[in-house]
Length: 274
Image (cartoon, rainbow, N blue to C red):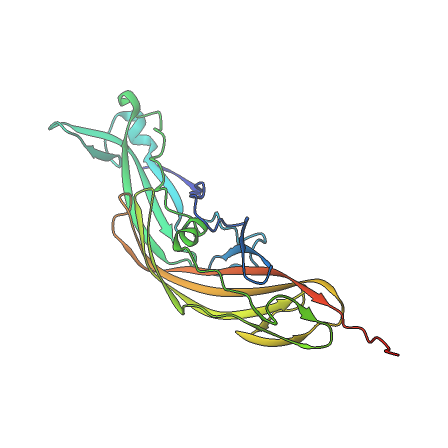
């Protein structure tokens, strides 16, 4: 008996849903003291590298599928039903077809969906392979994090309005330590918790320092850039109409939400008095 097997790899990619913190784009806001804050979010899937780099796209689906199909070619040619799957129909009759094997894995390679789907022959013709059933349109990592609505870290500066060269400027931030995840995307529900991992402060594009507060002395006058990153990690349960069961403990990876503020700094000059 000869059996033909074909394996196809699919990645379910869907358009991002609209939310107030759009991944890969900026949103604006204002703060006291005349500063302007720009908000940006980057997503890293589990096992991926730097946000925005190849291999860590926010468009990566929460579950990736490998789909294979098999058919007994001898049975198809001779009219035998040996090895061919059977599709239950609304009537008492049995309908025969191609068998597809769906294997879905999470970002860490764990199998979370393993099932067979039988698709009836088109017009009863066993020599023509019918199209594979549609993949479950599971949300992407970007859609999942967009639905969380992470709070942007506030950029608090002292002095608030503007700094002075050579003098100490205090930089700080604060916020909640966890956020509830509760979202519905294309009929799929994502429920879980996002937990704050750490804050990081960066001045004028310099290397970030992991801290919620710090001190900085500006040496030059003009507009300077103060950025605060809040790094979050999420774990959730994914359920949906196209999944045989809910997937618990799904690692959502990390999301970094950055608040960037322009901070003016003045210079004090000595003036001789007569």
